[in-house]
Image (cartoon, rainbow, N blue to C red; front, side, top):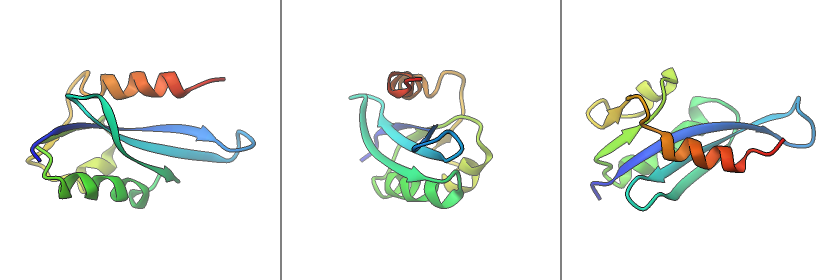
Length: 99
């Protein structure tokens, strides 16, 4: 309860590059552990599954990028969009990305 999270999405593919899939992750900022993730299309439904769990955990703050969907899915009082707010999670995504 009362933890801070970073949420970000990563585009990848399965089989061929025309079959895009999105990985959405939540990272707990203090421990830097991935606490939740979801795989699917880039829709509110895919994002909602993850953000609902963060609300249930009574998140203190949720940091995201400027993707407009987050504004409708995350309560305004805990949603933070700041420069470098998702640095740790973006670094994790770069570690996952292999071309």
